[in-house]
Structures are given as structure tokens and as C-alpha cells.
Length: 286
Image (cartoon, rainbow, N blue to C red; front, side, top):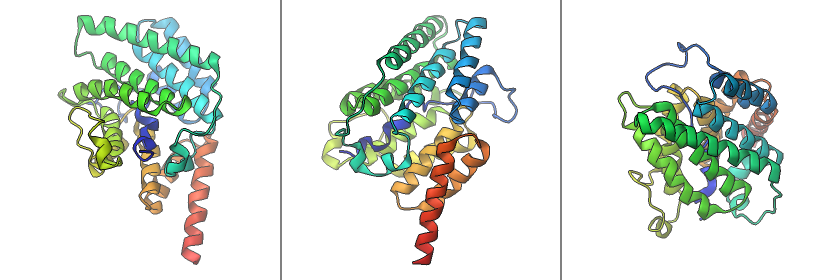
């Protein structure tokens, strides 16, 4: 079962794109876009400052609070050394046996932000059931809680249960015309994770419209890497991890090189790229 939850890591925050019918190249950057850019550069304080200012100006925008929760999540995972590719590439790291000490103050801030995102999203959906940003905020919130529960707290089965909520919101986003491309991130990750489970475990872990097809999961994530707005970089991170798990380091190197180019301030991406390239050099020399 370790392989199962191997990659649920980014299942949530995972969670990316404002409008699936608009190319990220033609949409003027919003405060949410700018916060994501700081987040991918691991400038968590910078992302928080942008979001806090946006909350002051537009206090009812649910995405503000879901992205703020994502910033808290990734800062905590970085502190606990959970974000390295080795953690997700090796099943032994996913057993839950490794003792971690989550920061209770961070946990309180994260769940407060999630509650605010959900409350504001629910208010919008009560008036407009197909509000894309509200559904995406719900999807992201479920994903963030999934990742925190599964990876920070080590409660894997509880994390999978919460992931069903993320899948339900993602399926609604994908059913829209045009589809909400970043929702492919959640569905793709679930497809890959379920497809990595032992056959007998799949009988106990069911998701609507998910068949446990690893190749389909990779295709979903590739769509996000090509067309996503908020999660495009995140999809590339996940694909690099997946290709390392699938023993295709050349493909992982390509995605990491693109990420290092686009987010030069991120020290972790630079280190991961250097490690992959060194391993490839050793392999070529042998």
C-alpha cells in the first residue's frame, strides 16, 4: 500500500487554474497568480503578504484563503523535508513510520484558512452552483487537507478519505464547458495513485469516475503541464517525481530543467535537478 499513497502529496494544492477557457499567456496576472509565482519560488512570506493584501481588498474571494493554506502547507512540508523527490520516489519513505513534529501554530493557521475558504466558497455556490473559482477553492481545500493529513500527520487512510471530496469537486469542474484544466491535476493524481495500489486494495478504495489507470493519470497531469494556469508548475513537479518512480530519469530531468529556468529562486528544484543530472552522468559512464 505504500505505493498507493506515494504521490498523493500534491493531490491537493495541487489544485490549479482560474479559468480553463483562458490561456495563462493571455490573462493578466492577478494577485492569486502572483502569489502562486512566489510560492513556486519558495518565497512563502512573499506569497503570504500578497494574499493578505488581497484579502484586505477583496475579503470574499475564496481562492485567497485556499492559496494561503497551500502556502502554509508547503512551508511546513519544506521544513519537515517532505518535498524532496526521494521522499516520493521511494516507497519506504511513505510507510508513515518516520516521526515528524508538526508545528501546532502552523496547523491552526492552515485549518483556519481552509475554513474561511470553504465558508466563502459555499456562500458563492449557494447563489451560483457552477461558480468556477468557488468550486476550485473547494477542490484545493480538500486537496490541502488531504496532503496535510497524509504527509505531515502521517494519517494515510484518513488522507485518502478526504481525497474523495477533492475528486468530487474536480469532476464537476471537468464537466464544465470549457473544462477547468487544472482540475485534471486532482483527477490525474488520483488515477496514478489508485493505479499504483495492489489489486486487492483497490476494492476498498473507490473514487467516482476513476479507474486506476496510471497512463491516464500521466495524461491528465500532462494536460495541466501544458494548459494549466495555477498548477502548471505543480504538474511538472509531480511528473518529474512520477518519471523517477517509473525509471525514466531523462523525462524527469526535462521537467526539472524547465522548473529551474522558470523559478530560479527555488533552491530545492535546483538541488533536485543537480542530483538527477549527476545520476544520469554516472549511468552514462557505467
